[in-house]
Image 1: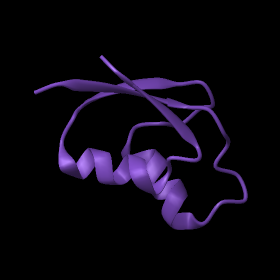
Image 2: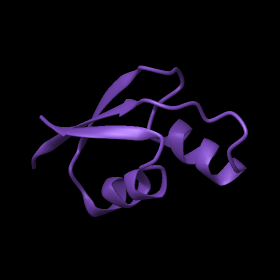
Image 3: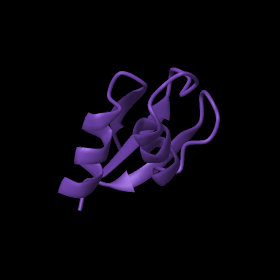
Image 4: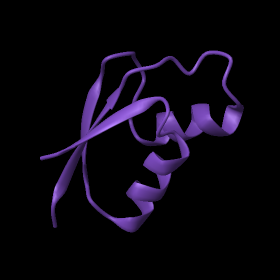
Length: 59
């Protein structure tokens, strides 16, 4: 499968708990942190929920 790089570009402070938990589930804990995941429908759904807080790049 293809990989996707996810970078946190905005803070999760003052965001709903659901969005904070989604960032944590993606493995993002700090601003500017980059993680790599498989390009699966579940991961893409999680990214869609917090797309205003992250940037994505095909790896």
